Image (cartoon, rainbow, N blue to C red; front, side, top):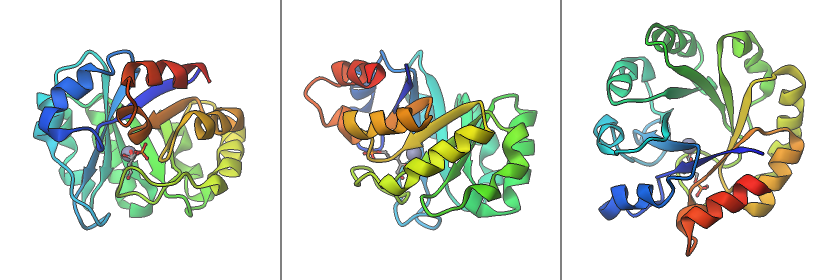
Amino acid sequence: MARIGVSVLNADFGHLQKEVDKVSNADFLHFDIMDGHFVPNISFGASVVKDIKTDLKKVVHLMIDNPENYVDSFVKAGADQIIVHIELGEVVEKVIKKIKRNKIKIGIALNPRTKLHWLRYYLDDIDSVLIMSVKPGFGGQKFDHNVLPKIDELRQMFDKDICVDGGINLKTGRMCTLAGASSLLSGTCVFGSKDPMKTVEKLRKI
Ligand code: DX5
Ligand code: ZN
């Protein structure tokens, strides 16, 4: 059974705590931090991560330039894991060191077109890989099926958590778990459904 994460990016920000309470059966909450530079959208900062009350693990997905300058503030906000994009190049090593010092989990994210070989150098140092199945920046996009062989190839070289992020629903989620994903992350499919809690359960069972 896959671990299920819920992205709050497409939740109703006017009632965010209530929305989050609807998915208390998920395994983790996923907070998409966007700066309008690294991705063409702006979302929210560490104070939102801090203010959300939940027993679920808080995973922070940094889609920002200079992430090394923000690690401490998200750790203080209660992040259990921080994910940084491999596309940032040599900064990644600095960010990994900072996250390690704070003794929380480390994830590396890859955009749909980014090749796996960039990852090899880091695989022993990280807890999870986030395979983006949409171009980062917005929820509600269509799943990119071209990432399926990438999940399969990664599973051959990495036995820890592989999470897929973007356009995940019951069908695409099943394709990902069959390809080797151990976690699924969904936003629109969950919060766009009549019963988010039930949708989380269904995703877990696929
Ligand atoms: C996109 C984000 C995703 C997104 C997932 O840049 O990283 O986490 O919010 O949302 P859905 O499930 O709507 O694609
Ligand atoms: Zn994300």
